[in-house]
Image (cartoon, rainbow, N blue to C red; front, side, top):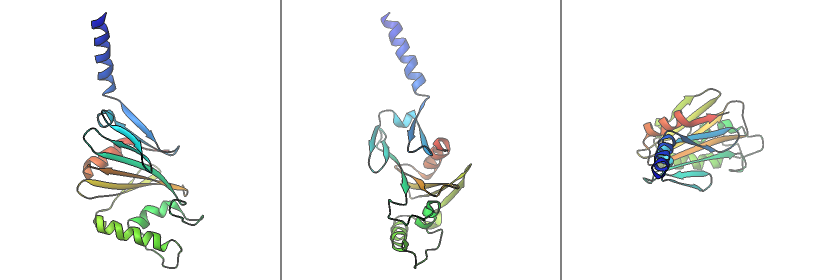
Length: 172
C-alpha cells in the first residue's frame, strides 16, 4: 500500500509538471505561466500580481486604467503604450502631456526606444521593449478604451519574454 501511494504521488507530480498556472488580472487579461516557472516560486502582490521564480526572476502584471495616471475621463487607453514608448507624438496643449513626457524620458534612459517590438494578435496589439535582462510590455485590446495590460519581466531575455507572452497571453 505504501509503495502504491508513493507511485501515485510520483505520477501526480509528473502530470503537474506538464501543467501551467493562470494568472487572472481581469476578465479581459489573463496570463498562463508554465509550471517550471511557478515550481518553487512565490506569488505576491505589488501594484499587480507577480511571481518570483525559484531562480530569482520576476514576472509581474497589472491592468492600468486612466485613473492610475490621472488621465482625463475621455482618454483612450489604447494609445497609452504608444505615448509611453514615444510611438505617438505628444501634444503639448493636452493636460496629460507632462505625465507622458516624463515617462518617455525615463524610458529613453533605460531602454533603446528604437528596439520597440509591436506584435499584432487576434483583437489586440502587444508593444514591448527589453534591455539585456528586463522587459516591459503593454497589451492594448482593440475597441477597448478603458484599460491596458502591462507586463514586466526581470531576469528574462527578450526571446524568453516573447516566448512566454506568445504562449501565455490570453486576451478576451
